[in-house]
Image (cartoon, rainbow, N blue to C red; front, side, top):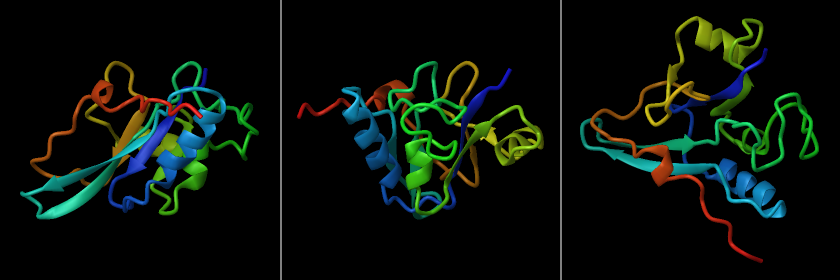
Length: 150
């Protein structure tokens, strides 16, 4: 059975928030809360600013309507709206257990690590360097971003 999820390349994300906006548009159209948000994290240890996308991890019924097989929300070539919108290519999505997919290869090779804010069987992993000395808040403090009624 397939297990879909995300890999975030924290070295590529430059904080454009296109993923969060795409999620908000897709979820708002369905009357749902948004499940993608980008945190700006300042690290005094590294003397740099990083951006860390918190993503929905494609739980059972994603608010955007996307299904791992490309069904729902218009399909979009098998990628959720947030991944399609990412200008930097910092978000990847696919079957986490499929060695023939780029996402699965990164997991199997041990190059991707679970995001520190995920619990249980993670659906979000990262590659790159998280900022040293920065503490990421638990996902329940960040997501969902409440829907703005129209």
